[in-house]
Image (cartoon, rainbow, N blue to C red; front, side, top):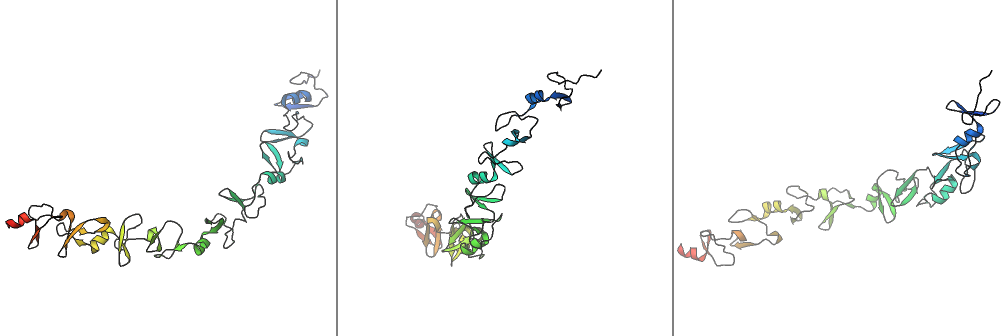
Length: 279
């Protein structure tokens, strides 16, 4: 006596019938389709065993339903794209959703290389320097007046040249005596420290930081011997080719301030009238 060979689900005999194995268990076609068939995304009907089940990202279609949602052409063995879970052939997707090249105004096809800048897109071959017409690719570029320039062309056509190093100033320059400088080139003539962002002065057309200028050119206070710059509104007293800081112009004997008062001189000393009478 032959062993029975029944459907794992409905238990009906499969003898002489078509069946499908799943995990080593046999199923009649009807049970298999009702239990395991995927539902077609297009027609919403089960995809039976007699037709191909086409799948893409966990979605399934009958072979006859796997079509472009726009023009209805078959997508079998053709490239396609998706938008909001709808299938689209390359032509329909490009005409509706692909970016247009800012230069040539034609569609940038899906999968082709493109360049993007400030919301605009270009074919890679259309993204060129406005001056030399060479593709910019991944090189640095500088936009100006709705055009893009490679750095060498921009420097040749637009950039100012630093008075010191003679190289182009792309950003962050300094103007001194109506001439352009790089920040890194605008240095104190004395100590060679960068002057950008700090107070400075000049002598014979050359820039100096305040320390260097005072140390090199300013007269010294008779009292404290430190330089008197006279810069920025600082006050000083001058008498017989000698100079004092305001705070240092005091009576040599009693140290009272002589600013705005009469005074006497004895040898090289400055005295208030009272101390001068006692001498």
